[in-house]
Amino acid sequence: MKLHQLRYLTAVVQNGLNITTAARKLHTSQPGVSKQLKLLEDELGFPLFERDGRNLVGVTPAGQQVVDRGLRILEEVQNIRRLSSDLTDDRSGSLSIGTTHTQARYVLPPIVQKFRKGYPEVDLHLHQGTTEQIGELAKLDRIDFAIATGGAELFPGLVQLPCYRWTRKIIVPVGHPITKERSVSLSTLAKYPLVTYTFSFGGRSSLPALFESSGLKLNVALTASDADVIKTYVRLGLGVGIVASMSLDAAIDSDLVQIDASHLFTPHVTWIGFRRGRLLRGYMYEFLKSFAPHLTRRLVDQAIRAGDGPDLDALFAEVELPLR
Image (cartoon, rainbow, N blue to C red):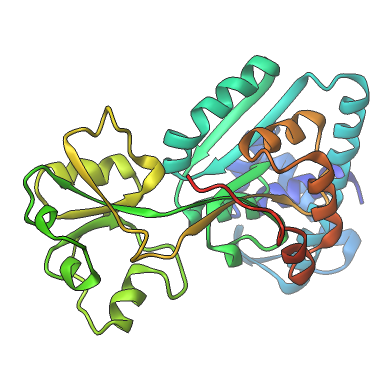
């Protein structure tokens, strides 16, 4: 068994069982990849893939075990390379981040700007998507850091570090009838069509669950994953908007009335995560601290050792997360 065979195997699985696409990304030939996969199967003595003629249509149960172990082996190989780079030159490298539009547009710009000044030779790659899409990128090991809110079950195997809390705000055009209300309640919101995020926040604090538990009908005019899209349609009069507090800019959004909704919605916690077992380079620790100042190298290392569940919760129990 050779290391490049495991690399070919995992690449094929990560590219939807498309050998041609995997070969192109690996900068090799399709016949070469096919040959090495066949040699690996012959050596192991069992099929890795389910086939329909020459086409790969699935991964066998035994094949999936090989893939899982292969990913861990390749991760350790990458860790050795990172260790070598860290010991020789920690000023260059790459950092891939998967996150949502709101984080990329409203939270990360000053952090990225500061980081680039400190580490100009580190290549930054920003991947935007829904929580589900970011989870898939993390599963395929295509990002170093995932930044998301909720959806912990979509990120198995990641060390998830809480960073800050945020609430939602109600937004409407100037002169909207809801601005005349002394206090906005769920009953008030139920009178209007809503424009808000695609429902990806689970639990009882999600909009559908809140309205259902209150015996109210949720009238949704539009959902989107992009806060700027939501604000655009609110301006067009499509409905009452509900957005993350940090997505509002006093100057840019001066034509919208912002109404506090912290009494209606439980604050959310945004976290940053990375694959357990990954060796973090020095500049990665610096990025973590820039994103959330309480994430010192010492605390991050403690979190890695703590594992998941109660131990990790206890570690952050005394940390007062800032509210954005």
